Length: 141
Image 1 (cartoon, one colour):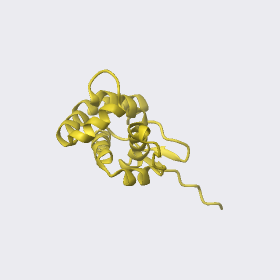
Image 2 (cartoon, one colour):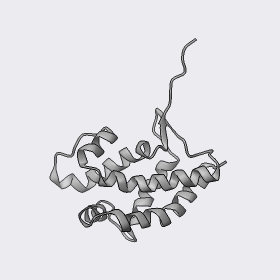
Image 3 (cartoon, helix red, strand yellow):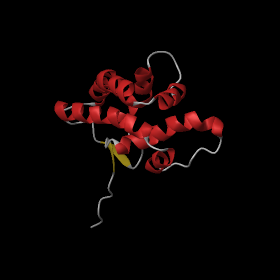
């Protein structure tokens, strides 16, 4: 069974292989430029993306639960590979679809386009990659 620290460690290890590979193989040049700008900083893009998103693998907002903590090692590895592959899939979606997945409104200011991309991905990715699930209210007796 995996605790939160084990999930985060495995998320980093998985990102270095899967995310790095998926970005280099799948992301077209125009989107790569947008992602480079959205995840501005030092180091390789995959590492900057992972630094921003690893937390999502163990922390869910109110009303949701994280389904990665407590799973066996094989399931964890498979779900984390899916998580990083879904990052690329979500990034490649048309903005309106990404926004619908994340239930956010579109950016009105063109200057916010890049930051909007990062926010849209961060909101849509956990449910798209199935690492968060809504908490169901217990039926009343």
